[in-house]
Length: 480
Ligand code: SAM
Ligand code: SF4
Image (cartoon, rainbow, N blue to C red; front, side, top):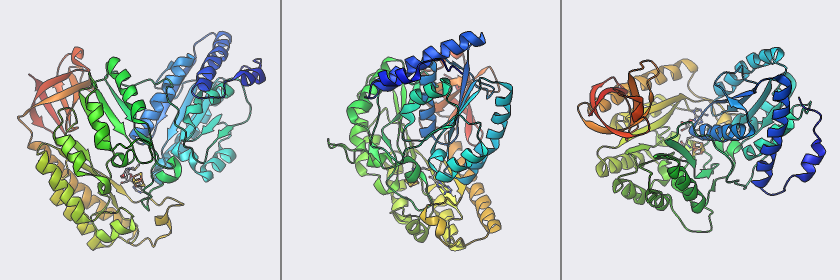
């Protein structure tokens, strides 16, 4: 790497405030990169690999926007010169996946002397992970966490400038929200928008509050400004992102609820669809249901994680609602919006879950008739309260329960989907079908996927599609 640059001077001249400091380091990194590319006689490439949720996907767009500005070329191959793993740690197998793939990256570094490897995201916030990387994965160049992702330009500048040791920059937490750094959206016509960061709920199984920190809402003016800019740039659909969007506004100087924020987003010209994720059942207000029901722009989809149908388990999960309250929310949503799709997350095998507890979950699945559900086997996360609870059922029993749940969820989801066959629905055409070139893949308001014959020119538009055939969790349709 380039060791000739006067790094001390570059740092001495750097502005102290953000985002100016990071914008400055983007320019500095660009200069160093140009030198390296001149010497190598070719452009350098990057690949940001995203593990986990929508929040990570949005963070990856930010990393990618920064690398584009520096002058790297994007690829989707891990043979790239600069590979960034944006990691997840919600379940243990997410960590194992990263370690597994890192080995391969280490090998490719031996063949490419210009290769740089960075790791970031939730997994890096765990102390034992950083220790393991230090000991066994010394070829990694950069490790940073969730709180200082905005510092990526400065950290990458250091990597490019040839620092020999693994650069590790992990923060315990922050109140800082840095606005106005470049972003590279995966889709031109739709985008995620962070409305809050972190989580204060401390569900006893969940590591998110420990790795993403305290809940912080972005100021409404910043959110609205970002969406207005996106709309001018051709974005038609926004997905408002937060671990618990229903508690948006807590801690802000100005009084605003999530429902009020939605009303403001609705007014933005050019935005045709609004989605959001995730809603915690304990904070789902009547006000929000009213706003959704009266809106033409807010999509007919509510992702409402159930986790368990047993009151006893819900209590031990620290979820603050009961089975009855959850079902009453579902009933209210379906009454006000008969065409709404309700989807959920369910955990099987939480410590101490009995057969009766599990049957309560099955009972909710049957009564709520979810349009889709993500089902998980409980994964013990060190440091969370559930990790020290008595485990309860053995692995084979949990697996049997999981299979039964999955079967039930899939059967009901297919029945729910079949009820829409024959309807003409609005579909946002998103991309060419991955397996069949003559088809376009799009998304209905209720988040279902439709494949229909069409021309690439309709990508990015909302078109009318007749749902010809239901294939369980997706449809084949015809544009009308
Ligand atoms: N904030 C959202 C909420 O309130 O539900 C979801 C965040 S979490 C990243 C996504 C899902 O992962 C959760 O809804 C839960 O079902 C699942 N999950 C979290 N921790 C888990 C664990 N230790 N084992 C299994 N699944 C887990
Ligand atoms: Fe985890 Fe609960 Fe926060 Fe969701 S609300 S991120 S499940 S602690």
